Image 1 (cartoon, rainbow over the protein chains, first blue to last red):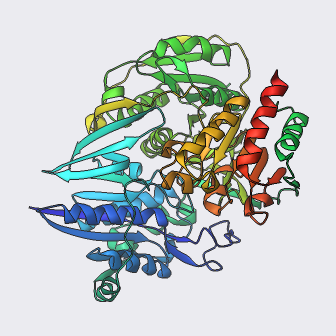
Image 2 (image 1 turned 180 degrees about the vertical axis):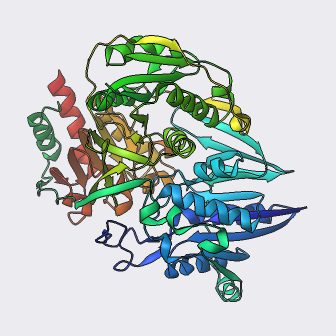
Length: 262
Length: 320
């Protein structure tokens, strides 16, 4: 038996950097360093663990849609231990919204061939958290999402989804789309050996024509949503800071009473 | 007047507060028609009518509890086809966002998630979102199809606006995908008696400075004196001091209460992403240089083990 896992990853602007919008109201990627979205590291990690715990012949492909620099994200995932990578890159993808992104990813996943898709819980820039559900809808396979525990055995994926009201145990037959949370297990650091090995691993580049997609189906023009404005949030006006000299709690209570919270 | 579909989040017929907030926003765009699914769906009607629902479409089937997400998408799609609404509004829970996204794709519509406000506009509803860890505010709209928008808790006030709220049965045919992901077990979360974190008017959080699971009793006591929910920073959760369900921040919950009290939390970007839109922010921290103090309306530089108990006692005294 073989198991083909596709891990979707995103190259995002560093959340600790000074993130901005470009003039066309897309995310400015030029003035901030980019990296593999932290939450996608958990997806790569779970793919590796599934592989390590499996008797099957497991092949892990990492897939990203993004600009030239997005190769850095793929290289990081390869250095963690993924086997190969696919980079979907096309100038016409600039400004693609979530619906369009899910279209491109789904086409690429189908072309790559898969038994299991694993995603992170959300990107750290868009933070919508809906790509896995959209992929399941497009691929017509079960969504087993937001898992804090995941296992694959005999063609079945099982996992635990910790929701607000309850913790649910889920089960579905492969092929399926899974997403994992940051509770699923700490992601490993790439070893020196892993980093060296990653340099030799194959990275395929596909453009829209490789996926039988037209420019008008994606990009800013093809988006089904439109951002009309983006305004920097005004800095909060400086508040009152007091040093506790023994009455700090009472002073704070006085402030809260003044604001009618008590 | 155009109808606006509102997806109802309820527990056995008890409507959760974010749904009532959605009714307030829906009334800005048109006439709210609620969609309530699963056990107790019909019992939601009274509360929904009181807050402006002209109609309540209901359907109950075991599939809603036994299978993940898709049966609810099927039902909401049936409601869209029957009503032809001007927009579909869904509470921004993890499940709500998944339902909304799949629905949007099926009906050929754009989707916006995590709106913090909604207004009627010339080209359809305009959604306000808070992005990049709340450092930017965007205004967006759906430019294709019937707008599907999820709205975060605490984005609008709950308003009484009595309407008919007539219950109508919704006809639903489940798709082939509906039974794809089986829920084989469910463990309800134990109730703490405190408000739900994302819905609470006041949130009291603890971080690295709390320094141990047992010390969270101090945070809980302060929360209880104010009728608040308890939150925790990622550092506190990763250390195993408090459950992940209470985590505030990028990988946890995003909250926007009237009052947020951060105790022993430095205020890293990860945390700020989850609380920066709170109306009033207060912090207690030993380190005068902690970035959290850049956000506060009132800050106390001091040891939380001195300040928090004194604050709790003072609040309890003032309440008499």
